[in-house]
Image 1 (tube, rainbow, N blue to C red):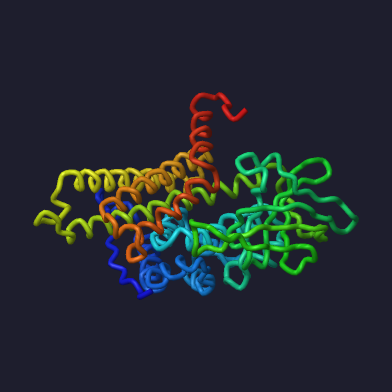
Image 2: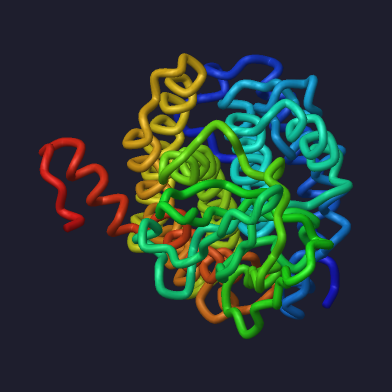
Length: 394
């Protein structure tokens, strides 16, 4: 497949750039340039072949996309949350799988080690993860426990100076290529803990998940634990219960809220350009009312999501954002982006299903993104419980 020329022009209908600092804009431009140069020309081919472009791991590290909010002393970027969001926006504009690789590394692997790990764990693992020498993954979801992680079956038993871990996890991004996994499992008192599992531990395997129609350029697998001996120094000491994994998911959901806007922006920009160039009935299809309706609604929804995310980023920077705030933004952006992808596909007609354009790939990717790290319905109930005080989960 021939390399695709990236003509992306970012929409900013309400002049949101005026709300960004020069540093934030510089960071966004660096990631945008990277995507145009390194991701857009190759990603369709990798997605068609369902292959993970391993070279992006080092590239994302060099760009500072692994743990951008982690302090510099541990290899992170020490950046604010709007900068982090803009990075994720630009990466997902290229491909959701590329953004997933960065999200998992920073929010689901580096964050819990930084927030809940010992100083020895931070020094051992974080610099290698930040540098891209090691790739990490996050093990929470199980075959029978997705939206209800409290029912997890993965467990470990205390055997003196180590514990023995058994169980399995599935739908794990990065798993087949990871050197470490942050895994959540229950102890003998049924309390949930985080454990850092290393690739060379006997009984630990990561079978690849095949046959995906979505996130095809992202590597997905299982985590299988068959009497894995884990040293006690690999247990995260500073958190117990679901607070640990759920706090990680809050950070990752924040990145998804920004990332999916990137996918929507790419589909809108593609559809807008196509509507001006495609001639039917002797004039550009963009001159017809129903096409303008689609485009007007797209840019309106993108603008609303951009404003919501900017405000959320400000609250994150001020340490005022709640998990419920993040939940609303994740659900809103995923639904918005999914709808925009479908409308963009219609504007492109039959060409919309081909790899010549990014729209169908984004659409398929977003079918995963709208589900992972809290489904659309789960996030609706999180907001519902927040405003009513009633728990509709049980």
